[in-house]
Image (cartoon, rainbow, N blue to C red; front, side):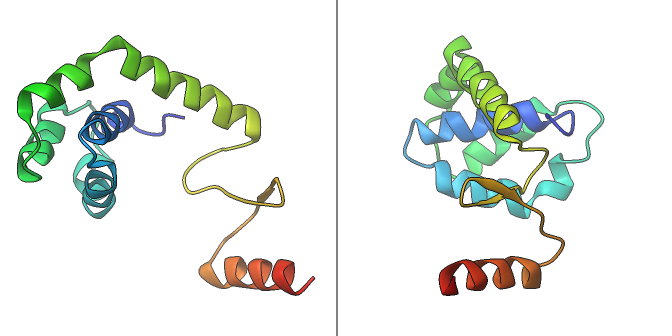
Length: 118
């Protein structure tokens, strides 16, 4: 991790939007538009600012939070914590504190059902 050139900027955008109480909305947008930003060879900062504008975020506040070194430090700390926990990519699922290998939604449903029944 990060898995693509824009992943740090995507994380910065999510954190900056979160400072305005809009983390969920930008996360949904990032997910639905991942083909647009997820396979870039270079980090497209402006694209994430366009998303913030589309959501009606305060542009000056978004930029301040996006560029704040503390925001990047939180992301880097989360990355280290994730790697220590065994996260190898997204999504990574855990069940009872252990990574859960999932190749399909059916695998996930079976594992959850077995855990609830067990």
